[in-house]
Image 1: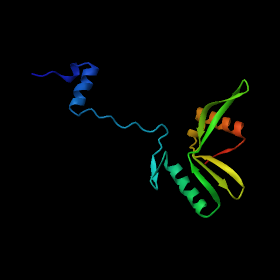
Image 2: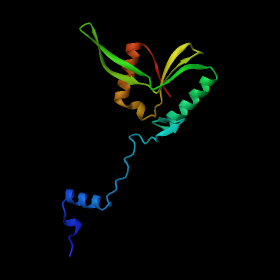
Image 3: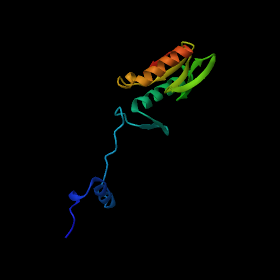
Image 4: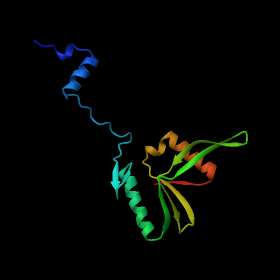
Length: 138
C-alpha cells in the first residue's frame, strides 16, 4: 500500500520527484530567442553578432579598419553641483577606427526587438549626448 503523489502538497511533491530524478525543467529560452555562438573561441550573445565580428575581421585584415575592440565600455556620468558623478556604463558590441572616414566607430548588433529596449535606448542617447559620438546599430 503506497501513497499517491497527487495527495502530497507542492513542496513535498517536488521533493519526491527530484529525489527520483523525474523532475526535469526545460531550459529557459533567451529573452530575445537569440542563440549563443562561439567563433575563434570567443563567445557571442547571438549568431548575428558573431557574423558581424567575422565581417569586421575581414575589414581589419584588408586594412580598412584598425584597432578593433570587443565589448568596449563607456562610462556614463551626470554633473551634480559641479562634480562629475559616474552613474553607470554602456557596453557596445564593437569599436574600431574607420580609415575611410577617419573616425572612431562604436557598433551595437541589434534586432528590431532589442533596438527598442528602453534601457538600451536611454544608455545610447546618454552616450551620444555626453560624448558626442554616434552608435551605429547593425
